[in-house]
Amino acid sequence: MEAEGETVTSLCVGEPDFAPPQCVLDAATAAMIGGQTRYTAVTGTADLRKAIAADLKSRKGVEYNPVSEIVVGNGAKQCVYQGLLAACGAGDEVIVPAPYWPSYPEMALLVGASPVILETSVDDGYLINPDALDKCLEEHPKAKVLMLCNPSNPTGGVHSTELLTQIAKVLEKYPNVVILADEIYERLVYTEDGQCTSFASLPGMFERTITINGFSKSHAMTGFRLGYLAAPERFAKATSVLQGQITSCASSVSQAAGVSALNEVDESWLENNVEIMKEKRDYVLQELAKMDGVSVSVPPNGAFYVLPDVSKYYNGDDTQLCLDLLKEKKLALVPGESFGAPGTVRISYATSMEELQTAMTKLREFLESL
View 1 (cartoon, rainbow, N blue to C red):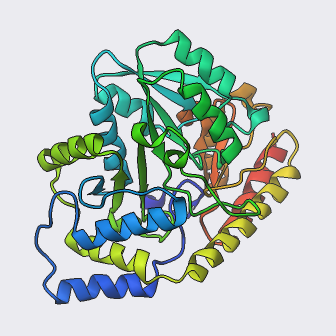
View 2 (view 1 turned 90 degrees about the horizontal axis):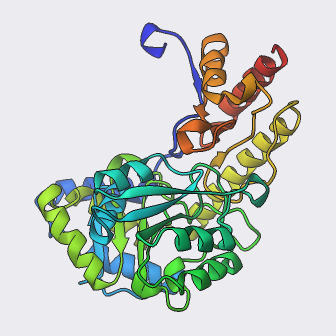
């Protein structure tokens, strides 16, 4: 539609609508002018790995050796895939809680493993139920990895420290299961304390957790393609060997920008963005609550997504709903079926308030016309 000159209101994209901090842009410019344009070590520059290790220790309470336990990649997505390659293979199973980021089950298949979908409940805010996890692992002895996206894409759900501790207690019974903790949204949390506990910080979990994080969501550096993996040496070493044969190092310029993001960006800049995102979340929830047949049982406390239930329309066919919505109102949403959550739609509120107001009006008018 846009290629044909039509204006489409889109709440599909999972990236912040604000620009990176000026110091990050300045660092990238300085790196280019200063000649930091060559290959770095496969695992990343020493400066960036040290900055990552310091940040994880000070904020998350987990201590990694920057020389041997951190691997910088071309975006967190590459790090997730390489983490899976390091942790499992052909004949293994990967537990993927639903709703899920669509890449998780596909990546499991790419490494030769079989994805096992662990259903969650809307009444629980789509968070992992420890008893259901226990049952799933008991029934799937070939499981080698648990995917844990916290905060969640697509739900925005945040697992509390208490719930994570209960999940860790279950995992004690299954020592061969590695936890791939995708924590890319952990700087976007709207609870009172604004905290998101790192799974690796829980008792007994460090040695079996591969933590994924990056700069795309927290610092709006999506185009820089910069992420990292932090894990015990056996996993980090395996992923560095893999990366050496896949892409080699991440961009040297992006890495210089990453150092600035961790060492120079004031905490108030991040906190301000969280407040702005929370206002947008609250607005979307307020508008959805006014729409008949649309429900959000548990308000999301993180990331920048809402996954409302719209199953009362189209007999639960969320894909057709989104197609007609796009055709009739030129409003683009993502069908929940894509995330293993039929009967829902994913709304990204990482856009301007004006765009959100337009989108909510279009959605309300569309549903009222049915």
